[in-house]
Image (cartoon, rainbow, N blue to C red; front, top):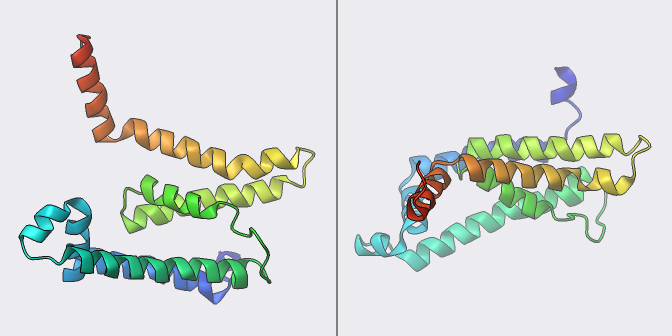
Length: 172
């Protein structure tokens, strides 16, 4: 267990603290309540006095600052120098982790760790005699499978399938 916690960049630990910060911000503060209400239904939030545009701008700034930490980690912690196209679509994997986590910070962290593990495994497997292209696509395939799993298991999608079957006249 010592190797798990040693040898990491300070930004790694900062990112874990960021998850805690986001959880507290979103679920324990009035700003978080406003952000969630604007995200859920801006018209309803506006009807109770929430300044929708201001709340969206604040949320965008907070998200931008957090995303900049991700970019900073990529160029300073993960790789020792800046290279062109260093992110290679990892932002989309981050969005997928958020979707897989259902917008809950802890669940999104677990999904991100899952996708990060797939990325790490693909790097390890490149030493085998498997074509590099297959190993490089592994994190993205895992991401797609994860999103398909969530899409077929969520309550909303089950209700949609039920409604479609009812419309077609099939028994449910």
